[in-house]
Length: 299
Image (cartoon, rainbow, N blue to C red; front, side):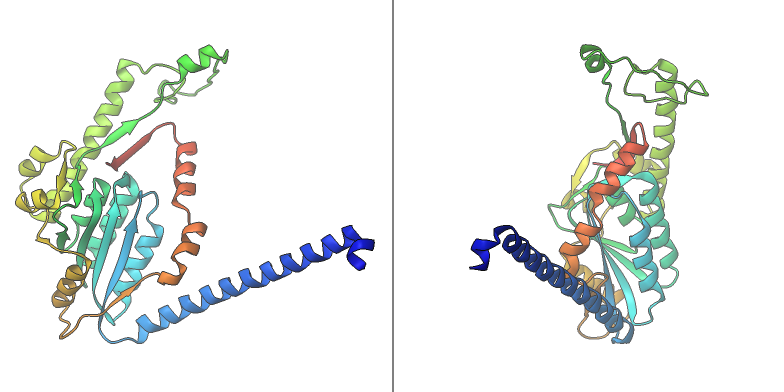
């Protein structure tokens, strides 16, 4: 009777009820997430000797969380060794170098093993090369030691739709890489010099991390991709195996006797929620809007 006499009020009542229930459900999920996170933290701190696993997934656009995870495991006495699980085609130069540096700092205290998943190329391999040892699948896509810079020239499109870009700058090269005009020869030389410098940094990092001659690394540092099988022949990888093999190896290097157990930095139950909250797409789009062109160790 009420629904027929007051249809709009009836609708509002039902909608409010659904909204309230949804709010309660979301709150419970968040509370459960906090609970799981806290339980995971306590487990690591009070557990017996274990191997800590840190996952590097997707494009490397930021280093903060990974560095925090590395530091946390480094300072936890229960963690005897660390596995960096890499599934990444690479990414920005700076974050890749920062993660590599943190791994090198950690080697003074604990062994670090890099486990290469489906893809661990360019910046992904840059990170791996700093580890105590590297293990990959035979078909892992890796290598791609090189630097890439790119931008889109859209001046033709702008002309077709009648848009004339106006740029006011304080220096000759302030708009280098601008998508609204052609690049000059002097600008190309500047960017090529910069690219070569960052490339040398990559080669040096791999040579030092893998204890190889600079010239040997340089001879294959032309951006080519390698399989895990190829990489082991070239000295870029130590062993063939999966993540479990990497955990076992790290446990042995860390002096763990008997069965080796692993802990992860993020509770698996929160993976989907975290990926929504910490979207790498948001970070990448932010970087694209802040820069005229991208410079990266990326496949």
